[in-house]
Length: 284
Image (cartoon, rainbow, N blue to C red; front, side, top):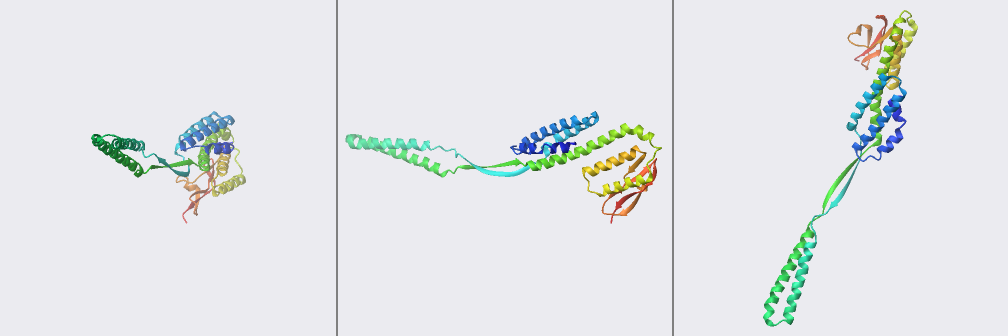
């Protein structure tokens, strides 16, 4: 199984963990742990040290790209009311003092001799001032509105993260497939050289050429890429090469009007001699 297939087997567990992530940083940590698990399982099934090293390097690069992944989901907004910072206690103290002084002034007027009337007036005036100050405090508190703070929370979207992660691993699998094919070519090169005398028959070459044309015309998918790689490797083992269009290989191709640019069917060469001419698309 390739890395994408491995992560698909862990899909529900991954999405369940992502649904509990509070932010993008926590989601990146969960994805990094998942990639580590994929690398471990991939290396357990691959016998080649070369492919293991390539997988480790590619998935390390993938982990470093996780913080850049678009994972934003639903935005939640709510308000929090904050204290105005004013305490009401400052108004009660002068009010109590004013009441006490006014009561003392009244006591002086009622029970004290006439000589204490001046003291009563002073106490009464002080009480009135205290009550006035108390009123200012209560009025200031009433006139100060509470402060509100708006808070936005952006939660990661598990489905979006999973799609991005599988696309990332699809690219990794393409690179690993190239490493696998190259390693096969290196190990099978002597057999390919020894078998050049036993060339493939022309009808088999024509069949393989038609299959390649079908694969090149089909939408690019992991299956079509694998088919093209396998056929090209099979031709290589048997002394033939499938050559794509370029400025250097243009002499091996016929050009036909097409909306598709580039190779429509690769040319087939055997011992550097053209066997089947290729097709390339041009402007219409």
